[in-house]
Length: 213
Image (cartoon, rainbow, N blue to C red; front, side):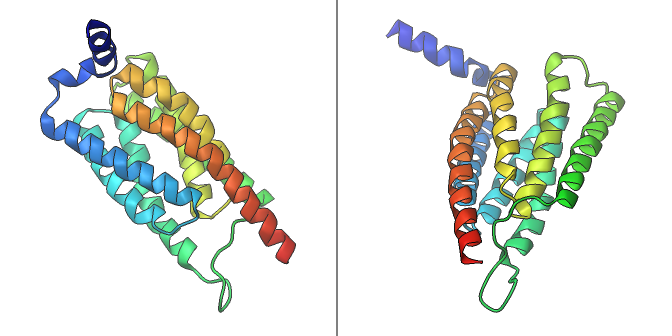
């Protein structure tokens, strides 16, 4: 049993000092976060209500844990979920809702602008609160910018959003584990798998839409 105990301690030792309510809330947020990404893969509108629940819980937890960059990501997710909910339910004609499309040149310009502006914004926030005291803070600024752009693209049903999620998830898996949030790290690992298949599924849907035009 000792090897099993050592493995368990390696992954979850950091939770020994946490309050039970914080562990329970993180588990709930992870559950709804996974549901949200799964619904996104299926192009199901439930991506947004489940995502809102997850992000609200994470905003609270990350504020308590003083992880400002991560908190800003989830606060932004919350706002973009409301925007995305509107876009996804908007009809383009009497029978069709907003379809999956490729990013236009103008939208590429906007997404790059979101990436750069959010990167600068988080750098300024971290500098103001003197949070650049560990290498993870510098990585936070990068992942925040990646996810900000990805969330905007997803809200507009652009297939390229999955590329941003995949890149951000690859970075976030070891990042959150190093920070000591194993459940969240596992969540991002599952996000990565779903994002990969989400891209494939959305691409099939996009090709199908193009054939019917």
